[in-house]
Length: 206
Image (cartoon, rainbow, N blue to C red; front, side):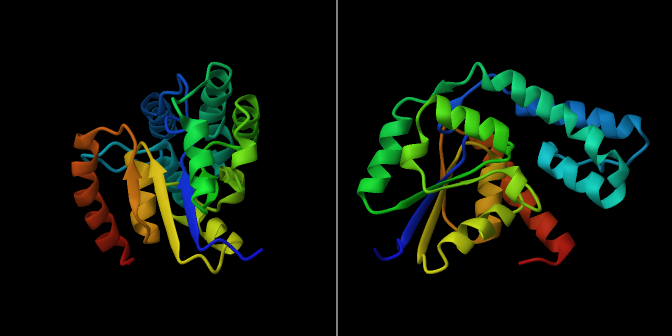
């Protein structure tokens, strides 16, 4: 069987499943933890995501990483038991497979949470690849998870990303693939463009 020419990549939480995981609360707690230990978090208009805060710690205060990551881990473990399936999520995955797409998950959750949720809702049969933070060197909004996808399907000529948050959109844009927003907040995406432009210029990245 020939390799798929098209891949549809889904975020997990708040896209295929929904849970009480409050990413803003996680980010605020992580930011407070970092500041309380004397590390610098630059001020900016757009809120810092947990993934970005992890990147700051890895760069400037690596000794704090293990303790910092206990914060999202605690929130994720509590939320996963209360997760519910998004309406028609299973049908959407099945439909993409019927259309000839390979299907993948790209999530900032860890492998334990992803496997638990996917198993609970019997989504695994509709997926070809699951990329969690355990497989990435950097989390969304960094596009490193897309590297794992492309390693799986090096011949794919079309990859699209579906997600709910601005970090999904930023990761897709940074990775050079189209993004489909699911139930996101428009105001977050209006801020995204200027934030991306500023961060790309500062890093000299394309």
